[in-house]
Amino acid sequence: MPVQSAVIPVMRAQRDLIVQARTGSGKTGAFGIPIVAEIDPALRAPQAMVLAPTRELANQVAAEITTLGKPRGISCLAIYGGVGYGAQLEGLAAGAQVIVGTPGRILDHLGAGRLRLERLRFFVLDEADELLSLGFWPDMREIERHLPPKERRQTCLFSATMPEKVRALTRVFQRDPEFVTLSEGQIAPAEIEHFFYLVSAQEKEHALVRILEYEDPESAIVFCNTKDDVRYVTAFLQRRGFDADQISGDLAQAARERAMARIKAGELRFLVATDVAARGIDISDLSHVISWAAPESPEVYVHRTGRTGRAGKAGVALSLVSALDIGAFRYLQHVNRIQIVERRLPTDAELLQRLRERLSVKVEQEMRSVPERDRRWKIDRWTLVVDEMASSEEGRRELAAICAAYLREHRPQTTVTEPEGAPVDAYAARAPGTGAEAGRGGRRGRRRGGRRR
Image (cartoon, rainbow, N blue to C red; front, side, top):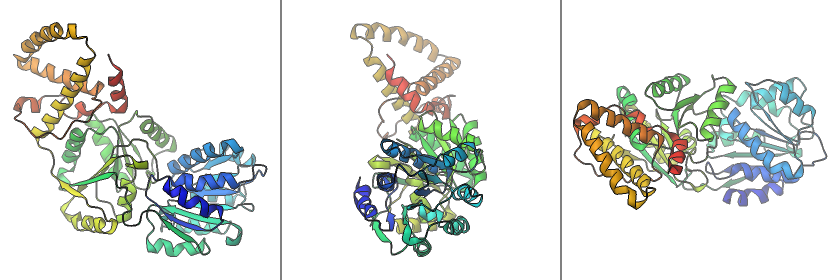
């Protein structure tokens, strides 16, 4: 990948580096490949340490380096809080050569003398802008005291955004670093479509539900600015029948790992998270990123939207913006050189038309699996049943429930086009099952529907 082609030769030349590259561009491989290539497999001591701001990112990076280092017999150990010490102590005693961790638990082991860094050759900060922010700065200065001198180690910083105030702090850790950027002119992936909805605080819940029903994303992260909002939005979505879970700093590590495992496996459709908790996580095929509230800075927007559109894939970024935040939202577009198009919320007619099209697409797919000789009599037979059910209010409600359940379990394999809008039946728009429930099913439901015959 381009970032790897640009960075690996410089790392092999043992130069300190500051790398600014778009999210999802392959930064882990850019530092992971030269690390596992240069480490001495015979030396059972920490020779490289990678710091990450979140437990999820530390786990993710450790898994990738473990895969890269396996052919050379390189041992990689993830160290982070929220879990027991047993496995970490065993890994340190066994002489793990690459340490990937979060600052708090790393400091814990350093202070207790369980982790020693005399033989350290590589020091990497992943999501460096977050690690050098005010929240992590005291821990980072303390960790720096335990590192070998700058002249005896190679220090590399990686991030999608690198504000000037952060670059000014890098001199504490680096000597004459080389700056490599692969995001000049636009720091957000070009494959992401950006839209926003102007809504009031009182409309947010209604707007979020309507957007999810209309967009019907295979999977999405909903970003909130606070932990309280994460809890509120998760509970709200669950009450409305959406398959949603949460990750935030207050959540137990086991619960965070379960939520991450579910969405990565395609078993969870909606993950609600704070910016810090979701920093750097890589979820394949994440189709949408939704901001419940406008981000607090232009850099945060880049990291939020970078969870989708990874490695050249397409993605959609949607933001709910209040009138009070519109000025700051315009500013972040200017800073990030991103054009974000305003959308209006879909009407009842457009929403119902979208549901009808989804149903039509799926039924057409199902009918292709029925032999030609059987289609006529099967359709005629069930048309009589539908006519009879549609003649009463109770029957129409039952048909609506059947349609909702059908779409929930058998989602179309193709994306329908934007509907032009059509006259709709007022009763059908109010029928149960045509709202949030009709949008459930997730990627697992889509796959199951695709195999059905």
